[in-house]
Image (cartoon, rainbow, N blue to C red; front, side, top):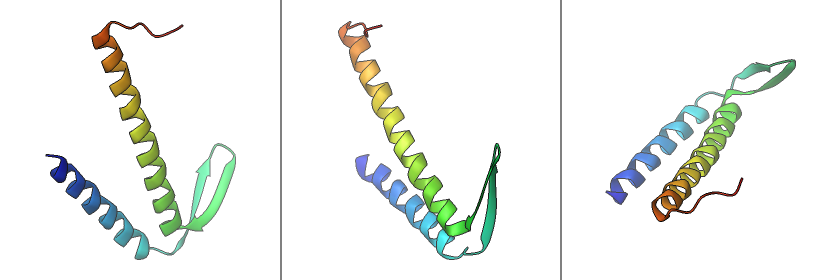
Amino acid sequence: MRWFYLAVIVLFAVATLVFALQNFEIVTISFLSFKVHAPLAVVTLVVYVLGAATGGSLLTLLRRSYERSRQGIMPAS
């Protein structure tokens, strides 16, 4: 099952990379009062990396929380 998950991740990463390489036009990203002009390829790759980092962190946090709950250890408040 681990190989299946790895294959899905690799396929998704390759699809994202292909999309990024085909889209070099400049786009404007607005958030609150900030505006950034950048190539769509750069925006796509940055969002992909940030999503992977936060997703991995969330899974680690949930896994540790689950393991502690199974052991009966209460987190410090």
